[in-house]
Length: 367
Image 1 (cartoon, rainbow, N blue to C red):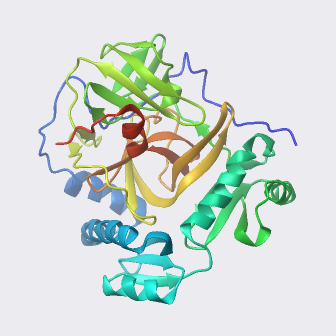
Image 2: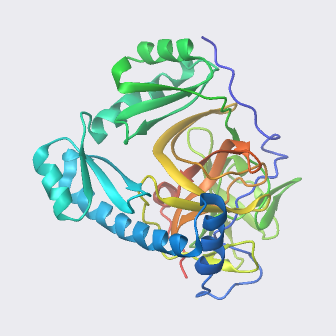
């Protein structure tokens, strides 16, 4: 079936795209050791996740421990690792494994083990098959991603029959797929954050890196000049990916605007487990939080598909694109696009930070 891809908020040339900022305001450098997580991130988590002040603080601490355990277990388990997520009710890391011996190893590390049929490699292989067939995806299919909790690939669609045909034609077994009925129509978001300008368009700074900052690829093409701060797109990729690197001589700090008069220090870029909280910064809707639902998601925009994205429940609106997203003090991604809004909620996708750093050989600037 022919694919009618999703609409964008304006053309790339006139798009006020936003990379929100992890790199922060190009002009005013906030104190590097500002301590806003307590008064901005925790406050936003209370509002968006329905937590008390103490619950928000405890969750940040628990997620930090879960992320450390997850990194260790991924390395130790190798092919037996079948995904992991943070269980917010239990406050612990859950690790899916494919055999009993691996489960014992997980429990020895203080995490909860869940034995499943399909490994990480199995799910990733099915996602790759769908990615390879993405040109044939019907217009009703908005996205797909590996859901480690259900040990299946979730396909979000407005029409189940067409989605089932697409899955079958791609060679993915039906029993490995969950068809999710959804009205979702993701689109790249535009404008916002700490502004920089591209001709008649406006974007925002993403995370600060050596020599400049990173942002969303749909903000501008390679060679495009920027002002306030003055710079140039040294690299840009969209669709397929949604990332870009802008070089500038302006001083940009390793922190993120919390839209409460302060900033959140960036300490690194360790991947947070699925289920962890995530907060994003953007000029349209400010500082908003949600949870990580999946990694490696594929989204079908009007301009083409983008693969490898982080899917979250954090809301966003036009003007929030390119903005920074963090779990605790760890950079996770820059805002790519999504559906819904911050009045009714929605789904927002992020281009992973570490992929951008690797693509351009960059080093994240931290406080």
